[in-house]
Image 1 (cartoon, rainbow, N blue to C red):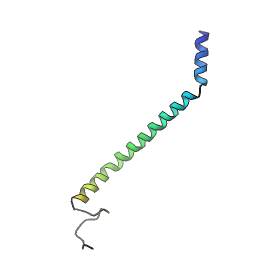
Image 2: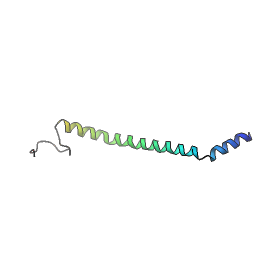
Image 3: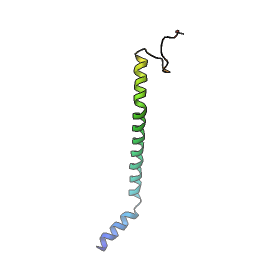
Image 4: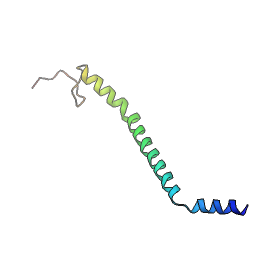
Length: 69
């Protein structure tokens, strides 16, 4: 039992394992942020692009029908 406790204490004091966990958590946070951005702005962007390419509006989202330059 004493050997097991020494192993656990040694593992808890090892900082290399903590670094790997920090990178995993940081990577997960980046993925979550990107997923949130795409889910929030993805629908709006998709709608604007579809409208633009169908000829219904210009790039700023203004309705067509104005005089061409």
